[in-house]
Length: 339
Image (cartoon, rainbow, N blue to C red; front, side, top):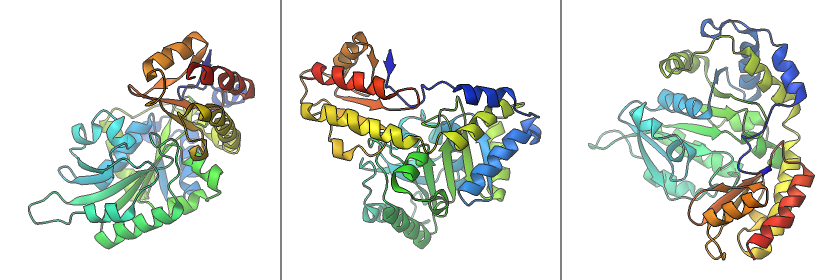
């Protein structure tokens, strides 16, 4: 079975398993796990921040970051397709008491003027805006990369209005590889970032909150409150360190395979191959002869798993466990299902 549902379906490589088995461990609730501490220091330095905190999931890392920036009852701005409001089960409201207001889905093609017009100051009997969140790369936006110039304009808008800027950087590794933008240049634009080790990089688990040392002290309390205090978790942090050392540069190959598969599907009219710049291939089946659930079932029968996102939307992702032969096979089978 060729599994193209997500880049989270990968399994640890032999080298990663060896690193996990050899990891030195301690009690991370006491901040005494040396491998976790090394991972946190490594990621913080990578993004030019003072500190980082290892969390079991990207959702937890995002929600900790948002709670650091937005007090209960106050407001976060983000797009309507953002992971923090689409795929995190209402956590911002349910756990953080955070009010969210969204701009229309635009993926990576954010209009800074639209965002600027939405910011509400304190007072006037309205909910004040405290933070703006963006997603790099954008999941439901087909792996699109927010242009660095746009991010800098959003930084200016945040500064002008006294609000914070958060980056859901689950796949920021892909943006770095595709554009050459240094991680530190991205990091300098945000008060907080979350970065994921299991999306694209092949680790079995783990994300980090990246921010100031003062914020991380608060973040440790928030993580504990949400049940994220972990003990001898260096065995998982070792997988993250291995991924940083070995699995970032290889993402260029995933991008190339995604483009090749998109080009094979383009004649069916379900994807614009020119817009596939990282490892996500969004499929719009609005004018296809079959809907997404039927397409997904037909693909499964032929040995390919695809992600069905709605009645007429599906998604394919390339990743560590999908080699050239797998993508060639998918490129042979999938277009025929849509003809």
